[in-house]
Length: 291
Length: 157
Image (cartoon, rainbow over all chains, first blue to last red; front, side, top):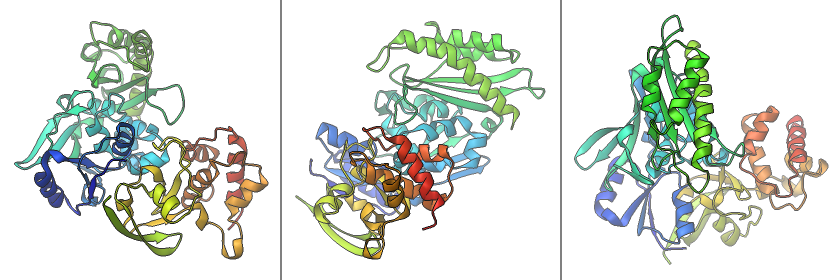
């Protein structure tokens, strides 16, 4: 095991102070389910780990105008939140399928996003819910739409001296129904072969699709939106043929460049996108009716 | 190697440990306290053999940095039996339902089950399965394990 110092600031101000003091020698750790594994696997550690686990001020799920979720909120808290389940369903789907109960008890939403693994389960749902990341830095706060947050595999726009403090979801997204499908070989303790998130907003009579969002994870090095398929759905009737066509468009190379990677080949991912975009759209529509 | 001194509650007793700052909770339990009930299977949070309960929640002790344990309450499988070695209902049920084969996963299984039953005394089978989703039994004796937990849920401790 590599040597490192382990610091546990009691609040955000202290954490910011430590980040400033140690600069590039330090790395942040939240639940540790990625960081500790990485240290063990690579036998490399930063000189200083700054733990955010004691920042209970960043553990919350609030609805107040929009939705505000503290970065230190655990997956288990999301899984057990009736508000998240009914109003941000895709995020609930994702949180409930991450790792195991043991992992969900400590792993955090902010950690999942900042680690920026292509397979991060919460990324797709947050993209279709128009989420924004709130970053605290030495010059104050800035808000970055999640569509601009991921810059590459395990890379984000977060600067080394910034802390992700909150995920924000606009109030308007509460009118969408949403769903996430984690396509896996096993039922649990698994990373997705492909992740598919869909959010739909229906007309009052529930016959027409007013607005839509579709996101794919693991499909590319960063989570992506299927804009062509989204555009196709807008203003269309809510009908099986329409949803199937959206799946076909999302899986086409015109819309998304879906890659082959270690865990899965592109052709299979494309097939699953074609199959599960309509299924998730249908589920999202069902959920939107129940709202 | 830089050391850290942590005070916490272990199986109901206040304890102090002085161990290298890089140690995990699992390593501290096994090598400092010589409590070898929690096992290292994978060391990366996938197998659940190292499961213990921290402040009421099941966690992978292999991924739990030891400095974080300051002020918290830890329960391991060694903390389950009562005075004079009376077994906990879960331990009895595991024995009576043949829920142990090689035994390597057993303490983790029991701790995951305990965390569940403490919060939900009468869980549905699906909830039991979810609670065990991070505990691998490579002998694959899952059915007996689930039956044992159902039996324990029926017993009042």
